[in-house]
Image 1 (tube, rainbow, N blue to C red):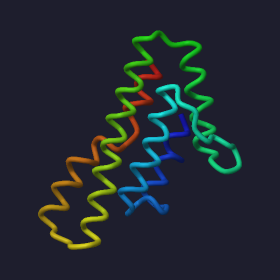
Image 2: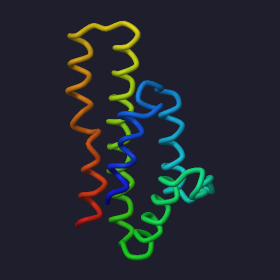
Image 3: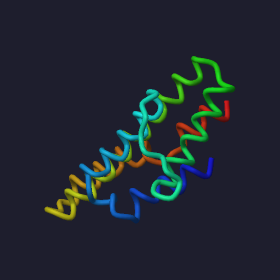
Image 4: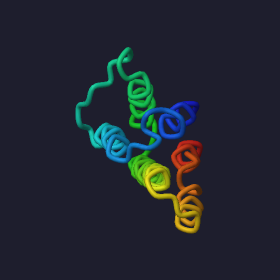
Length: 123
């Protein structure tokens, strides 16, 4: 799932890396997609959303309901890790405290690697 690597870059290098509210809004779009809501997935405006929609449609067509639920749970877990990471970057840029930011980094990093949703799909 190469989508995860491109998606993850938005929160590592791009404008969402230190923007917690914007990051949450973008993640909410993906949760809305898996909930069946209609969102803007124009391939020119939002290529990653478009790519994810294609992936999700294939999951819906081939996976059991249980696997779909596990994928959504893994996606939520991954997104929580991303938010921890973005919050940590934002806070450390505002008022760095090494002890606090290192602890937050270690807690969030394990969840933000993108492995969880991929692992569910590979099962």
